[in-house]
View 1 (cartoon, one colour):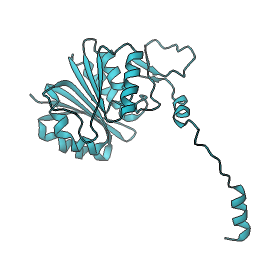
View 2 (view 1 turned 180 degrees about the vertical axis):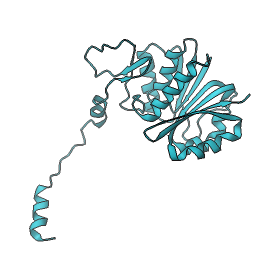
View 3 (view 1 turned 90 degrees about the horizontal axis):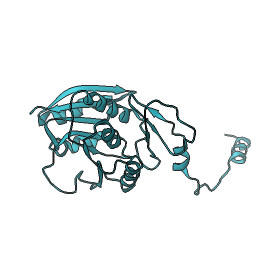
Length: 231
């Protein structure tokens, strides 16, 4: 390159200190209401009157995954809606709860259900608790911090009628036995966080645990899997 070109490039370059910029806050402001069949999720920054003829659910997710907009979350919600027509679960386990969006959705879908949400991120647990309290669901949902190398801090024999795991595919595979052991007899498993090209690897990991494929839901290159324990 010529010296003139180098001089031109350097004169256009500006350096600014933006360390105090609130990236999470600005990103949070971009979240718009997310509408599903039965509910609409919205955040605190939405000040205008929302004229939806549906249940309104306040959900803030600036520091935790789960605004309801990502295809993996949408796939889980569609899956829960499908299960609503089939079963009346007593309990549900939400692995990788993030903002608590799926725990909250489950608690609003089934009146008598009790839900445990777990995550390896402390901020996610705090955000989930806040969102649960805002929607007056703290008596139905419990959140726990999980160990980074093990989903559950302790070993127990708790079983759940629905287990939802919306986490990265490598963890779904590595923890397949641990997750499968949490599903009750004839219970359902919802797996998400899976690229469509990864589906066969996930199914291979879970087929060993008496789980039958019920349905696959694909949205924008991401696939959510519904499986059922066969006895």
